Amino acid sequence: MVLAQKPTRSDAGDVVRALAARFQGDVITPDDPRYEEARAVQIANYNRRPGAIVRATSAEDVADAVRIARELAVPLAVRSGGHSIPGLSMIDGGVTIDLSEMRRVQIDPVTRRARVQAGARSRDIMLPAQEHGLALTTGDTATVGIGGLATGGGIGFMARKHGLTIDNLISATVVTADGVVRTASATEHADLFWAIRGGGGNFGIVTEFEFQLAEVGTILGGAIVLPATREVFRGYLDYMPNAPEGLTTLVNLWKAPPAPFIPEEFHGKPVFMILTIWTGDFEEGERAIAPLRALAEPIADTVAPIPYPAMYEYTAELENAHGVALRSMFADSFSDEAIDASIEAVHNATAPVALLHVRGQGGAIARVPVEATAFAHRAQKYFISAIAVWFPDDEHPEVHEAWTNDIWTKIRPEGNGVYVNFLQDEEPERINEAYPAATLQRLREIKATYDPENVFRFNQNIKP
Image: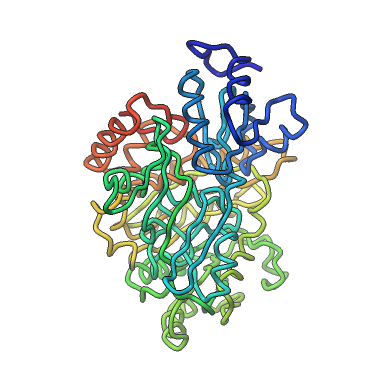
């Protein structure tokens, strides 16, 4: 076994022996028949081989692993759901702390609170919460891990109505770099609580979250598929920032998939598909959705009363392992030239799934003061991403990467900030786009308090 950097006091064998002797959870090394499955992640761009994968089952397990790795000067990575876009769930050499066994979800229907371990995925909370008529804004794919999602912010299907995932966080159990288990909340380690709500995994390993759930039973949800024209795109941009807060939408400007609800003659042709989620009174919802339907004669319209978890059927394909080239930004405007370039790019797309992804912001996202959390990009009107997705047997991913880079070059001047969870392996200075100067300075100060040696550095790193 070769480690990414040689421990200062130990060789690789010492690391494995120390883990085997002192770690209470499961230790998986490259000679273990489970190793290949254990190191698999969602994003197929990466093929990293940890020196050891330690499967924790408790906060104490995580603390033990952190202390051992720190004592032996071994680099560490942390995995919750394995959806990390830059592949940061695994590390070459060193130790990956794997939280995938920590998926317990406990819901109190009276207080509407949930305790959720960090290895849980979106489906692990949305399905039991639905049984009580409750929900939480989580990832847009059912397999997105709560640990990475929540520490980065958590933009999801109900964000304009019920806020980001972090806006519903009451407290968190955090293992810091000294191997101590701490509770972070508004009254305990409040600086740490502020930082983990948007600052990513820089400040410790969150092992459990306590969330406030919203009353959400049946929603008005589904897809409105419209022609891919400048007029439709512009009409959407004009409407959504000030639309009623009960309405959250996700747009895919892409070639229509062969979905059964889309007429066959449109399959493979560019369309403007609006995933639509309304929570609240249905009559109000119909009025809120009407301006979207009026943008053009719909090619298809599946919006109807459905249980909230049914929305995840629209993103089920992305639950499978896939490669991705992604660039994203927040924006306050999007010019006609950028719209035209986006439509042209979709016409010329090379990947099996290639799209410009757009979300209208505002609503509950913008009501939270910018300084209240480390997620500070709340005032911008739009969240926009250029995304190419391919599958592991694709022989020419570089063609799809070139497509993404080409459209990104054309639309990037329109941007103003970036969502840290949608950063790929990009130039280091983009961390300055993820956090405004005052936010980044405060994050660095908190990093210096809780992780002065930058133990947690295999992430979108904020240096102390």
